[in-house]
Length: 93
Image (cartoon, rainbow, N blue to C red; front, top):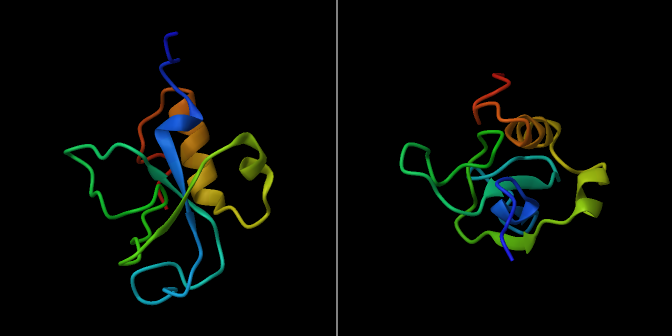
């Protein structure tokens, strides 16, 4: 079975943990991270540009998470943009 060019499988969910420190967002937000790191992108950042904690807690991404009020709005915007073929750095902050 072939996989669609774009799918939720290409992303992971960064769960908030004890390491909400200078390496991560200071709010209790769920962030999205590309599953496969790309050479031209910084591999230690979420879709919105936040740094990853030293020991991230991962979860697979599913459609239910996209409705969670804790999901970072910038990560969600960039996920939707990528789904429509726009570059990952859209929209800029």
